[in-house]
Structures are given as structure tokens and as C-alpha cells.
Amino acid sequence: MSSLSEMNIFVPIKHSSQRVHGKNFRRFGKEPLFKHTLLKYKKHKVYVDTDSQTIIDLIDQDKRLKHVIVFNRAESLRGDKVSVCDLIKDFIKRFKVSEPIAQIHVTSPFLKPQTLVNAYSFLGKHDSVVSCNSYNSRFWRKEDYGYCPVNHNPTKMEQTQDLPVLFEENSAFYIFKPEAILGLGSRIGRNPYFYVIDKVESIDIDTEDDWNFTITMKDVLK
Picture 1: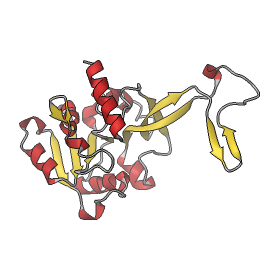
Picture 2 (picture 1 turned 60 degrees about the vertical axis):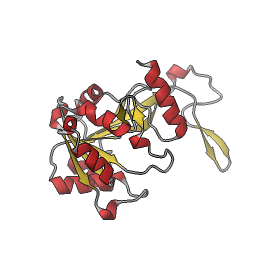
Picture 3 (picture 1 turned 90 degrees about the vertical axis):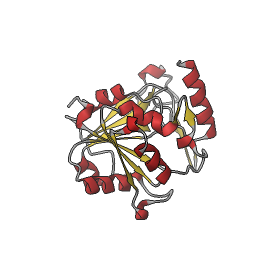
Picture 4 (picture 1 turned 180 degrees about the vertical axis):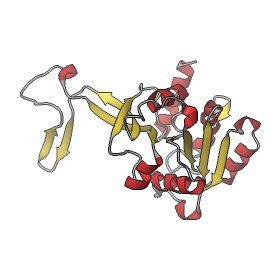
């Protein structure tokens, strides 16, 4: 598997944001943030699940977005506490999807289509591919009794490059086969591949600080 055109790209977009007011509609360069992402995938099959009539209208009115199929989110699946996994399962059943799915977010504006293509190539040997960050650092976790080392022995000073690598799921994308999520209820299957992406592509806008940093990075990367 190597062609992104063989995949369905699924993009959930809400009208409102709890922490960053109106973030999907904020200008990112010349376009609203949500359009910035959708326009990058003009060669591919994109499905947008939304609770926003405004987003539906803006997509339908834009001739550049003919590759996008936008549909109303089911009333029973609206709200801030609904799992994206439930949205994906509804999408699969609604459109009778049998091809692999790549789920992305418009809040990861630096993710490149070529990165999805490269990651998709691992789906043959694996039932899912997960974007992540990797770390060679000394990690600790807090327990009731105090702090506990996660991936190192404090009495044995090893070089950080020799420590076990830890992978952080960053939610930039998930690629999976429909049967994986229908059977397990998770975007991560039984045999996943964790695909490391660079720090810029992994940026996700979740707070006002994230937004400000993203705008700064956009100017730096011009």
C-alpha cells in the first residue's frame, strides 16, 4: 500500500471550541484554519463530519473543495464528550466504507500530505499506523509514594541515547482499516506501527498559547 488516493480521509470539525474560541474559523494565512487543511488534499477523497451549518455552507460554496464530501453530524453524536471513535464508526456505516481510513485534524496545520502517504505504506504489515513523537530522555512518573523512574535506573548513569525510546501519541493522524475500529472500538489496532513525525508537523492547536506559537512558526517557515 502506498497511494493516499486509496484511502478515505476523515476530518471531524466542530463549530465551537472549548478552549480556543472560534479556532477552526480563524485566519491561517489567507484561509480559515479548516480550509487551509482541506485544500491540501485536493487530490484525495475527503469526508468532513461536522455539527456546523456554517462549515457545510462554506464548503459547498467553495469550488476549490469539490473533492470534499461534507455531512451533518448525527444529533446523538453531538457534544464535547463524544468520542471521535463513535464518529468514525458512524461514518463507516453511513458510507459503507471498506477502504482504509486516515483520520486527521484541521488543528494540525503543518501536517504534510506526503507524510500520510509515507505512513500509509506501513499499513500492509500492520492494522493501524499512529503518528507520534519519540524521546530519548529520562522520564519519571508520580505515584502515591513519590516519584518513580520510567525508563532508566537513577543509580546507573546511562547516556540518554542508550535509554529505551518512549513514544508519545500526538494525534496528528491515525490510519487504520475499518474492521480494526469496528472490532476493537479503537483507532489503534492489535498490531500498530508508531510513525515518528517531526516536531513542527506534530503541532496541535489546543490552547491560545498553541495558536500563538503556530502563527509564529508559520511566519518563520515562510
